[in-house]
Image 1 (cartoon, rainbow, N blue to C red):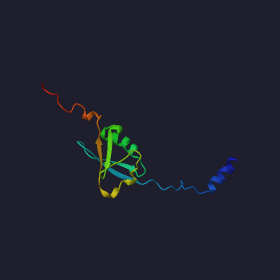
Image 2 (cartoon, helix red, strand yellow):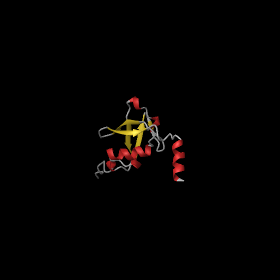
Image 3 (cartoon, rainbow, N blue to C red):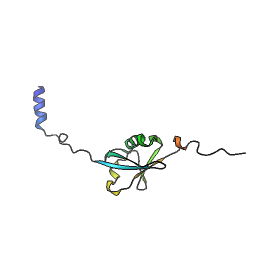
Image 4 (tube, rainbow, N blue to C red):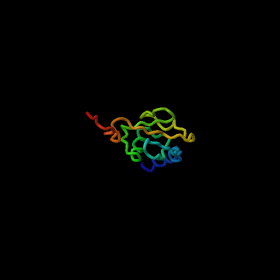
Length: 111
């Protein structure tokens, strides 16, 4: 029975066998106060996953990270499909309140 199933499965050409590999693109990120960095990402990668990968490079927690591309804040559920690889523009990484880099930034008031 297993042999029959195997023969049937081999008779149907699967798209997955010759699957088109996901298009990989180099995305450049800029973080204020840090050097820019680049990640190799697939076009169908969700922004929430991009934030997790970028965390390793810039040490900002994903929940305190906002990604901006071409003046537009990228939503968690967006994918990089909106990103134009040939534009040369970088994704700006902004950190929001709560990041440790923002703590204790000013001196106390003198009385």
